Image (cartoon, rainbow, N blue to C red; front, side, top):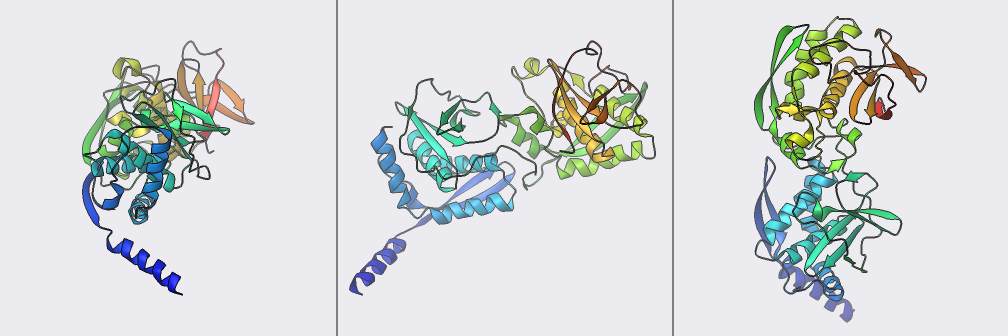
Length: 388
């Protein structure tokens, strides 16, 4: 009994000396004041080496970190953050808390919290640079990765930073998160963040007759996607529009196609994507491949075939609810639609008949049902479709 009393006294004594501080943070359009335990700012860790990194992790385990992590997890769940946005929140928070500390401590603390949040992680290092990896079952492009224990680990530290990992790194043998879950970059639901409303208009033509649609959009989603990791092309098609854009744009397009035959309605929608936007290849604009979600076309002056396909796919799904396929030629992306009302050159996929309805061209035309010029006899790949 005496031993138990001593243990209880020690536990009470630790919590009594625990203190909290606050940090203010702008997470996209959301302003936050976050409480954190002061003990999480630990002394030491001057060099990146196996024993020191492992020791620092174990010392972090002795801090009262759980309530801090619980708060961030609650915010993640209540605001619909996917794993990538949650990682960005952790990263931004730790950057504020450890503002006066070096990148080594920030990186190890971020790795610690990501592991304790339930992900299977790895840490590599060279000199005083460290790199956080996380197990993911998804395809991420233009980002370094490693294989360990038959799992693919994505280098989160190299995404959207100038920190490019060298080819030869030391992998920390200490692996505390091996029972963790896979990390996902998918965003099939939008985060619940305050909208930043901006006015927009699209000028387009249907059979040379000009039309104008004015609506509002949410710049928050644009900021989120501006530096989003390069996910598989078909995943961009599954990211919905913001409520602001949807509620101000979709009803107007629905009204334009109301009571019209399916083929005519599709012709109106391809005219919208073909003539409402100026064409330029991603590499001309961004210097790299930059696939867009449907809503991003309204932020940029230029777009290409991938971007217009994402917008057209979303519009057909929400307005006409027709089966579709995402079609990838070697150098062109387009959409095929299934409907008995379309006339043209059909092909069969899973015993259903589809017609190409190219959202990019011919410019100024609203013809549907035929492959783009020059692609009539070129083979293609089906990347996905609606419904899944």
